[in-house]
Amino acid sequence: MLHYSLSPTVEAFSTNCDDAIDFEVILPAHQAHSDRVRRIPQEQDDITGVDALITNERGVRIGVKTADCVPILLYDSRREAIAAIHSGWKGTVKNIIRSAIARMTDEFHTASADILAVIGPCIHLEAFEVGEEVYDMFKEDYPSLSFPANREGAKCHIDLPGICRQQLIDCGVNDSNIEVRPECTWTLHDRFFSARRLGKQFDRQRIINAVKLL
Image (tube, rainbow, N blue to C red; front, side, top):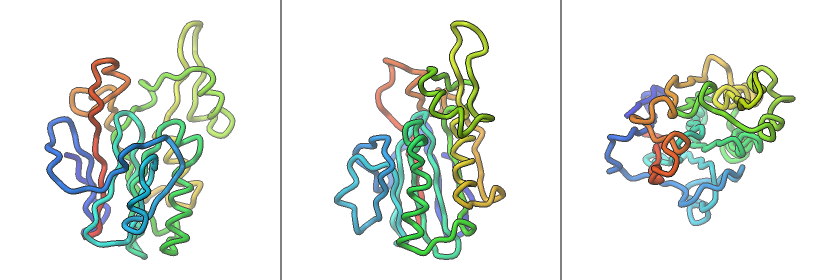
């Protein structure tokens, strides 16, 4: 299990393949690669098809499931609020990070400069091959983080965690307050779940990325 040091008053972690899921956590029953955000516990009955949860309730562990997509955990150190975000390439195109921070601002008066962020294990640049249609969605806004095919028959590549980091910065989060974990789920598929690497063998298990105010 990867534990993150956001604050002594915050528990934050990502599980790996060997971890028992024997803890209580509020998770969306289904994640739809959307930009929908819900506040817990007020909107807990409406989280199916949602990809980001926020709360300022102590003792409530919220989380998202990933298996190559990017998990982002946020902590507002001044207002004492948290968020768990699932951002695949579709959610990244929709900028779910911006939607989550905007909702935290509306609900908790969060200021982006007070946010500490962790980008957890996910598929990294070298392994994340995409078609030209996906590359075209990123190349103008993130030219240094999206790479065309370098030879005929090759695939384009996208630095998805790098783009999520840039989206955090664009929202006003300080670069020094962002931790990007080096673990690539494709490379470390025997330690973390990778839907792309395992293909048809993938049994739909997921990394649980969770955060709780203590």
